[in-house]
Each structure stands twice: as structure tokens, then as C-alpha cells.
Length: 111
Length: 114
Image (cartoon, rainbow over the protein chains, first blue to last red):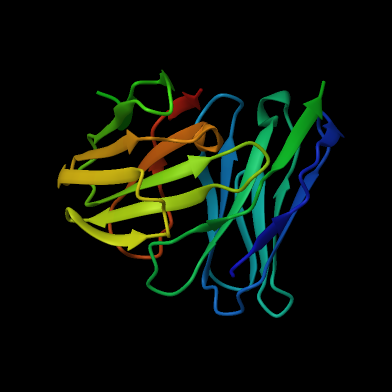
């Protein structure tokens, strides 16, 4: 059974701080890694994806992947109240339609 | 028209009812999905269709019956549901079978089974 683990939170950070969201996965054959953001009462939307070990930056967001440790993280710099949402980590294997999602981490950015 | 639209947004049904959820995507994608989202549980993939052909069925009970008449429309037919089936049902679409992982979700249909 493929599993994706996330701390459910809530994770509270002050405005302007760095929010660090973590995810581990069980399937060593996983190849693609994604972060989705879901606002309360809304549907998930993709914000980052990463395929290779290392860091990938996009604006205030940085995704980090360590396949040896089976660990992926999302850093949000200069956190804003509008970043308050649940962040879902998702993982897929090679050539697969199937994304395995974690339960999500609820982030609250305090003004 | 917005990308992926789902109707109805809210549905209350008894265990003996038959109802259907509808999804339509206006993005020109060729893959469509049904996901179930329950409180304190991860998103669960139920069904995948690629070019109208079902490619995944993740051991979903037969009281859920999908239908994909074309690449733009997806239905989920519901009958004799149980209270534990109450959840948010999300439809999604994607461009191709590649590993981009970019799913475009609809706003969901909130189902309550009494």
C-alpha cells in the first residue's frame, strides 16, 4: 500500500516568516512529486511539482526533494495571510495516472 | 465557461435513492477522474478515464457507477448508498497520461446520505 504522510497541523506561522511543510512517502519507485493548495471550501490547485533531487524555486515557493530519504518539502517565504490553506502532498509512479495524496497540512498565517 | 464544472454542488439523498453527479470540462483534456474527499482522510482516487476508456477502478463498491460518454463529460451514478459514502466528490481532468500531475479540479459535489 503506497502511503504519503503529512503532519496534519495546524501549522501556525507569523506573517513574513518562512513556513515549512513536510511530506514522506513509502514507495521508493515514486518519480513525481506535487504540492496542491486547497482553500477552505474550495478544490485543490497545483502550486509546485518536482521530479529531480534538490530544490526548485518558483517565486516565494521552494520545493525540496530527497529521494534517498523519501522526503519532499515545501517552503513558503514571506508568508502571507492569503497563504492560509491546507497543503496536499501528492506522489506518482512512472507512467501512472494515479496520484497518491497525503491528508494535508493546514497552514495558518497570523497577521 | 470555467474549466471544470460539477453539478449539483450539494446533494442530499436517502439510502434507497438513485442520483447522478455530472462533470464537464472545457479544457480540451483527454483524461478525467473521480476523487472522494472525506474529513481527515487523503483524497481517494475512484475512477480514471482516458479518451473515454476506463483505465483505473480502485476497488470502488458497485453502488458507484461511472459513465464517460465523451472526453468532456463524466458522470457518477449513485444507488443504494450508505451513510459512510457522505463526502465531497471531486471531478478532475488532465491533459495526457504523462507524469505532469497537473489535475484541474471542479468545485466538487457535497453528498450527504441519510
